[in-house]
Amino acid sequence: MTIYKLLLLFYPRVWRARYEEEFLVTLASRPFSFVEGMDVLRGALDAHLHPCLGTATTPFAEKMRQMCSTLRCSLLTIFCAAVGFLLAGLSFQKMTDDAPFHEVAQTSGVVSLSFHLGVIGAVVALLAVLAGSLPIAVAVIRFAHEQKRRSFFLLFAVPILVYAFLLGVSFFLKTMAHPDLWPARQLFLTRSLLFGIVIVAIVASLSTACYAVARSEIPEKFLYFALFVSFLATISMALVEVSILIWGLGLHDGAPQIFSGNNGLVGSSTAGT
Amino acid sequence: MGVPDFGRFSDPSLLILSSLAGGKKHGYAILEDVETFAHVRLGTGTLYGAIARLEESSLIEALATEERGRRPYRLTTAGMAFLREQLTSMEALATLGLRRLATL
Image 1 (cartoon, rainbow over the protein chains, first blue to last red):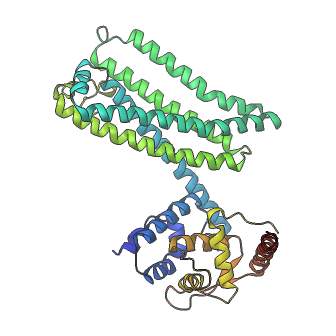
Image 2 (cartoon, chains in turn purple, cyan; image 1 turned 90 degrees about the vertical axis):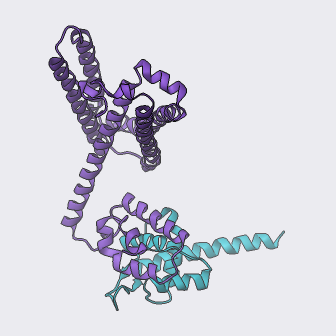
C-alpha cells in the first residue's frame, strides 16, 4: 500500500467514495513531502468534523441514514470513552490506596511521574469538559425558559438525581457490606451491582443531556468552543490512559506483591484490573 | 444571496473560484493554475476541503470524469455571482487603501 492510500484511510468512508480517485491522482502528481502529509491529515480531521462534505449528490434518504449512523457512532464513542475513563480512574484510585504503593512511588521515578501525569490529565479533562459544557447548559436552560419547556429542567435534573442515587447506594454498601461480615461471593455480587448502577447512571446522564441539547437552539460559537475543548479533553484522557498503563507496569516491577491478591475492581484479580 | 462561511477555507475557495473563472479544470490543474497566478501552493487536503465546501454550497459543480481520476469542475451561476461579489468588494477595499496611501 502506498503512503497516499494509507493517508486516505484517515478520511471518512462517505468522503472517500466521492473524492478518493481524483484525490489520489492529484496527490501523486507532485512529489510527496512532510508538509503535504500534514495537510492531508488535517483535511482528514476536517472531513470527520464536517460529515456532510462529499454528500452533495447523495439522495436525501441516504443522507438521513448517514446522519443517523454518524450520530449513533458519536454517542457510542462518547459512551465507550466515558466507561473506559471511568474504569481507568477507578482502578487507579483503588490501587493508590494501598501503603505498598506509597513506598514504591517514593523510590521509583517512573511510578511517581506517571501517577502525577495521570492526576494532571484527569484534572485537565474534567476542567475541559466543564468549560465546554457550561455555556451549552446555560444556552439550553435559557432556551427552556424562553420557550417555557419545563420538561427540559427535569431532563437536567436526571444526572443530579442519578448521582445522588449512586452516592446513596455506595454509602449503603459501604455501611452494610463490610468485608468482615459478608462472604466474598456476596461482596463480589454487591460490588458488581454497584458497577452496573454506575453504567446505568452514565447511560441515563448522557442520554438525557444529549436529548435536551439536541432539541434546543445552541449558538454556533458555543458548539465550536465545545469542539475545541473536547479535543483537549480527549488528549488529556488519552494521557491519563497511557499514564495509568505505564504506572501499572512500573508498579508491577517495583512492588509485584500488590498484584497478587484479589483487590481489583469489584473484588476481581488485582493484576487483571 | 447569503455568503457562505468557509472558515479557514475562505482564501483557498476564492483562489479556486478565480481559477475556475478561466474555464473548467480538474484538481491538479487548479493547483498548478493557483500556483502560477497567485504564487500560493495549496496542499491537496486543503484543495479538496475547499472543493467539497464549494460543491456543497452549489458554487461549483463536478462534470463527468474525462479520464481515470481526472474529474473537472466548473463554476455555477451562483458561483459566478459569488465570485463577482467577493472580487468587487476586494477591489473597492484595494481602491480605498491605495487612495489613502497616496495621501500619505
